[in-house]
Image (tube, rainbow, N blue to C red):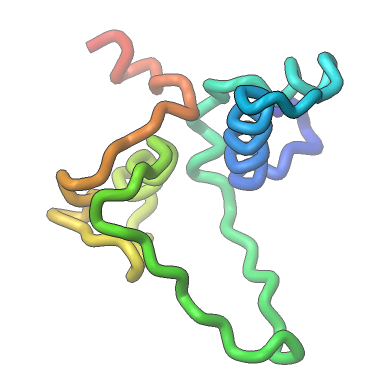
Length: 116
């Protein structure tokens, strides 16, 4: 979503889910589909993380991500540009997701990368 009421990281996830659902036959309003079409702006990969957990929900369990999983390219962008963001459920090599992961394109390439 490309406007001021954007939720950034959540938009990446919603865009991906809508794309996958549509490919499987889910009917989505055309205006909404256009608003969340892939790939979206890579700046959303660097949006602020919001912690929503509360003690009332019990203790969180970190989900396991297989070492051969497909991950969004927004994860790679965040690893590259967000100092200190090192998700413990990913295998990282030199601060980036390991070579065994498949990277799915969900954001547009940043201008510097596209020009190179």
